Length: 251
Image 1 (cartoon, rainbow, N blue to C red):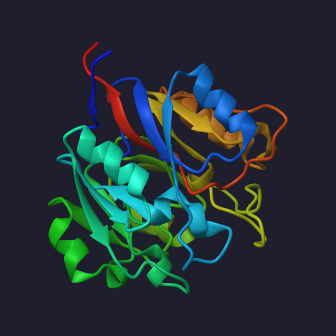
Image 2 (tube, rainbow, N blue to C red):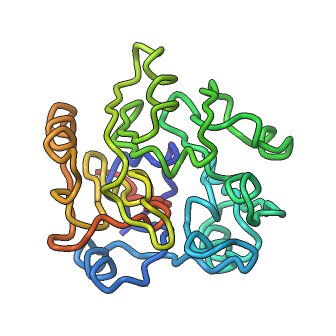
């Protein structure tokens, strides 16, 4: 099967063939196996606090044109990207505490990049694609955004929701915090428990019915022609996003 890097970060045009994620959980491994998706597993950054030390959306971000910004510990990811003709740029100084732990935690949603602009280093700014930045207070922007399709998001962060609501071509849904688990914290984030695995299919790490706003989410996805796959009986758990890297090349 021929495959290629995604044309646009986070938003596949076809079936996803490889993702970058933290998959220590057997149920999630089985879900990827069933979907025939290869996983490049995130490697612990010892300078980050647990449990985010293996969160993919902390440790890497695809910026298009086959270029990935990566934490220096992600040698398996770098090898995969470069062996497939891509380019990696190491970003140093990813470490706890905030905000140095979220230098790469920006969300490319298609026509825009959502992030706390003050956190971006000059090096990262120079590499980012030429898209309008929507500046928000939330540093963990990617964690806080479930990207459903181009310019279509679910978020549990009010600052992000208020910011994107100013744009007529962004379709967004605000949901309550508290239904996504994250060890050592009161809760995780909606974007951290999911990712697109096909053009119109989201995979959730856990049972979507466990979310207090399940009906709102289900209806929003249906209205936007987005299907979802979840793991029945498992709590929704923030693993630092499921980041699609490659997809099937062609129909």
